[in-house]
Amino acid sequence: MGLGKNQEQVLAVLRSACRGPLRNENGVLDAVASILSESAILAGEDRKLKTDRFIYQLGLLYAHQTGAMPAFTNGESETRFERFVHAVPAPADLRLTRHLVKSAIRRLDAKRNPQFARDLENLDRRTAAE
Image (cartoon, rainbow, N blue to C red; front, top):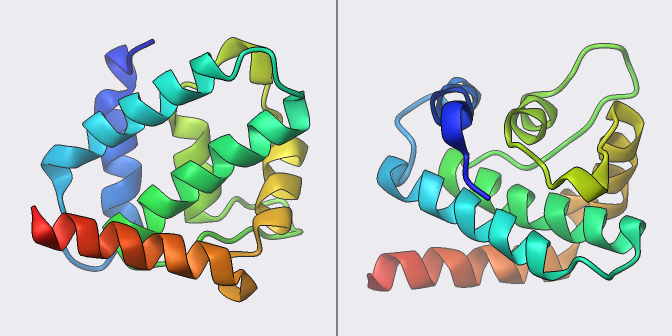
């Protein structure tokens, strides 16, 4: 599963989410492709669990590239992270809706999730070592 024509849209949404340049613009598309292929491998899993994993991985990528934490809003307008999630062509079996994305982001709770902070720190270290 590839990004196809969504490549530029994914990059544009990420660029608009940060004040400066992306941390590693060349690695964004590879990372998204990796997340999509990992999601395809999890084909037999529960939809909620698979959605949560998909949003978690996209959240790590978003936070790493932009320096901003994934968030949601209860209002009608989308956050930049929600726009990013919707720009990525999700696996067909997820059937992502706005409400599913918001609830997955709410469960992620990136600002108060110590596991997310550790995973983000590990990602930062791994990238710095390369």
